[in-house]
Image 1: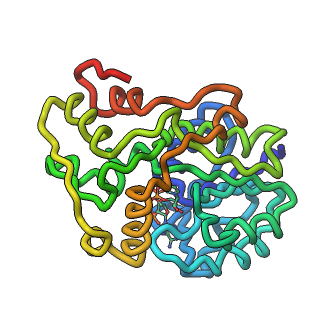
Image 2: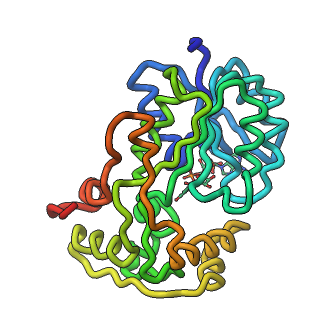
Length: 265
Ligand SMILES: NC(=O)c1ccc[n+]([C@@H]2O[C@H](COP(=O)([O-])OP(=O)(O)OC[C@H]3O[C@@H](n4cnc5c(N)ncnc54)[C@H](OP(=O)(O)O)[C@@H]3O)[C@@H](O)[C@H]2O)c1
């Protein structure tokens, strides 16, 4: 590794800021860049790219998160010339063939690592399910389908290893937690930890899509409908492969995040 700062795109997001904390603790220089950071980076505004890229080494690449057009990734990487790129993709994103971000990163980066996480546990606390949890009523298309929720802390651990250590180039890691649990069960565990009732119910993919701003709603609605069909009901070994240890459990996330009371794992 060089001493050039790591560029963290999406650097204030659920994974980006956890990676930033870890790099800071290790004394690894980094630059967080998005539309709301002091060094501004906007996928939709090429005039912001050069300042964000200047002098950086490895890149943590979070694709444009609020719209589906990933065409900017190729031109950005062409301009960056980064040797090492760690891409945040998604588990199951290859259901219709190789996703564009994965293909572009493989083609353009001499050293690439692809992270394919399952649904983040942190969606319940700081993401797309958080408002429902807060309101005491979460309605999703998942029915009682299961997912092996991944803790964003584990994604950050894997990303930091891939950004700063050898041995991860050319690897695609499917990342999940240690067990698949149903959405009603996940909500019940959070309710128990918070000590207040939280109901879980059904809404159609279209009804769910209407609650999400931007282009993403329809895709997320379809993915959550896929959970009802069993698409997320399996455990992946990427955390063990990358780090040589087991992933954090959903119970651990709940206790850390919501718990004033002890929670069963
Ligand atoms: N959440 C999940 O369960 C999950 C599961 C699997 C994979 N993923 C993947 O993880 C990625 C991140 O998703 P997330 O929902 O968890 O979001 P997040 O990382 O919490 O936030 C997304 C980040 O992207 C930045 N951003 C958004 N639009 C941008 C733009 N036009 N230009 C520059 N930066 C922009 C935002 O910062 P600013 O607002 O400051 O620009 C924010 O820091 C997505 O690609 C998603 O496919 C998520």
